[in-house]
Image (cartoon, rainbow, N blue to C red):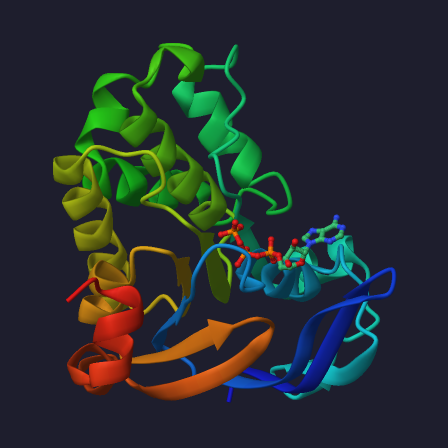
Length: 234
Ligand code: ATP
């Protein structure tokens, strides 16, 4: 087991935002977390990346309790988050953005990984000398994912990668996420686009008002009447 969240709760002041969350991710799995606006998806990611304190429960990563580890420490341990809204360094070139993603590594395999990123995202190679801020929204999303991967993470956290993208680009991003999984990356995919996320996920969790209300394989959840009614608009 790579990640194991048990009985996690978290507050904003007196507001209980997450309660009794149990969730696990095995090495190599693609796990989706879906839920409506305000369900607590972002809060759970904040708990994982270490910027939001837990009020109860625990997070174990590769067997070690990281519940109180700093955000820095978690990045060093191999947890990389691609934040919602991309947030690339606009004035820097595409290539410099990628290099920054590898700043913790001592050159080992960085050049090879840069090539791997350009193979995954050919458009980034074409635009490698251009300021990242000149890329389209979809291209910036790809760059944000590639930059996170340059850190050679053991777990990739994706926060709403399809947000604000045109349908064609959404399909492309989900295709890429699937390719990454096939290449062995362990991925936690947080999405409001439940259909697309569950279609590619090994397993998924449905979050509602701060609690996990359902879990299963991606296919099981996609076929579930309640999930269809609540999240898939069917
Ligand atoms: P979205 O898709 O809009 O990001 P979400 O599922 O990620 O939604 P969260 O942002 O995690 O949901 O919010 C969970 C709950 O916590 C919501 O009820 C929200 O109003 C509340 N909340 C979020 N941030 C804060 C905050 N800084 N202070 C107080 N309450 C907050």
